[in-house]
Image 1 (cartoon, rainbow, N blue to C red):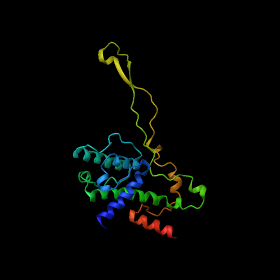
Image 2: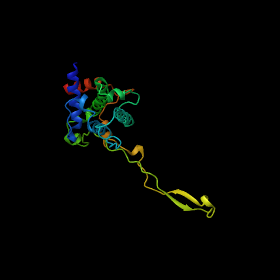
Image 3: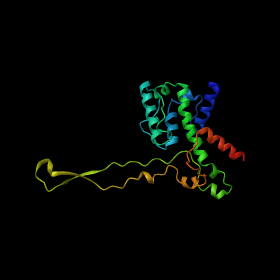
Image 4: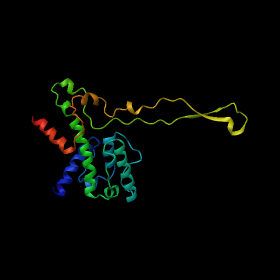
Length: 218
C-alpha cells in the first residue's frame, strides 16, 4: 500500500472522529499535531477533557513529546489501547509517519472491536429493540474526584501549644465508586446479544472485520 493511500485512509478515519467538533484534516501526518486536533481526538475516546493538553501550536519539541506521553498514558488508563503496547512518543511528536500510523491503527482497532461487540444488537429487526440503546462512540465523562475538606477543632489538650489544634475531615458527598461508573450506559443490554464462546477473548481487528463482513453477507 502506498504512503499516499495510507495517509488518505487514516485522514478519512480521523475526520470521522473529529466531525462532531467541526475539525477537518487534509493530511493526518502534517495536521494531527497542529491546533487542538490531537486533544479532541483523544477526548473522543476517553470522554475526558484533559486540561493539561491544549493546542500543540507554538510548543517546543520537548513540550510536544511530553504531551504525547500524557495522551498515550491516558489512553492506556482508559483502556482504549492495551497497557503493554509501546509507542515511541518522540518519533510520534516528530511526525514520523509509521509511528503515527501505528498509534492510529490501535485506535482504529478499538473502534472495530467496539462495532463488532455491538453487531448482533444492531442487526436486530425489531425497531424498538435496536433503538433501546443509542449508538455512541464517546463514553460518559469519568467521575470527578472530590477533594477532602478539613476543619480545625479544639481538643482536650487545649492550651498546650500546637497540640491544641486537631485537623478533622468533614463529611462530604461520597465519591462515585469505580464499579458504579458506566462508560457506555446500556452496554449490558447490547452485550447480551453477543454469543459467548468457550475461553472467550475478543479477536484482533482483522478477524473482527472478516466476521462482520460475513455476518452482513449472510
